[in-house]
Structures are given as structure tokens and as C-alpha cells.
Image (tube, rainbow, N blue to C red; front, side, top):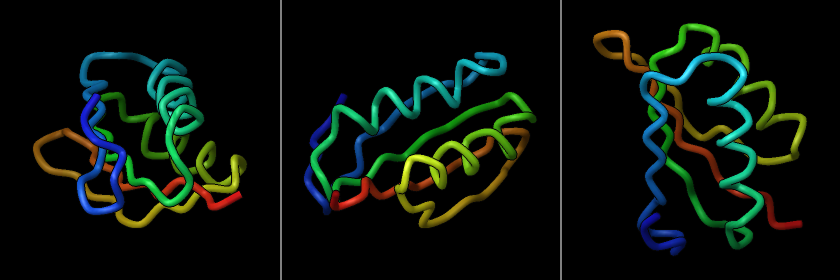
Amino acid sequence: MASDSPREPTRLDLKGLKCPLPALRTLKALRAMAPGATLFVECTDPMSAIDVPNCVRENGDTLESRSEDGGVLRFLIRRSAA
């Protein structure tokens, strides 16, 4: 993984993984990050469009942006301060 600084998001490539792995790996990565750090996640499983935002919200973190391009879902998540 890359730097956990607030300026440079950590990148997590979860392309090719199927539900529930993208959501579970996203949560695992977030738990290892410093408060306020950002995580950029890329997934190809269509269920990630639902699962990742729900897990982020339930964990108390913030989904800063979400996009899709060519079947690749991209999420920018900020680790909660608590």
C-alpha cells in the first residue's frame, strides 16, 4: 500500500474480486489507516456499488466520491477521525 497521508490516497485494486471480498478488504484496509487518511478503491463487481458504500457508512467513515467508468467502480473514502 502507498502512503496514508491525507494528500495521497492509499490505492486498493480489488478488480476481479466478487462479493463480499471488495467490501471486506476495503474495511480491513480502512482499519489499518490513520484517522483522516484517504483510500482509493477500484472494483469490478457490480454489487460493490451497494456493498462498499454501506460498509463505509456503517463503519463511520466517509465516502467522498464514487464513479464508474468502463465497468470499473471507483470510491474515494476518508477514514473517520474516531
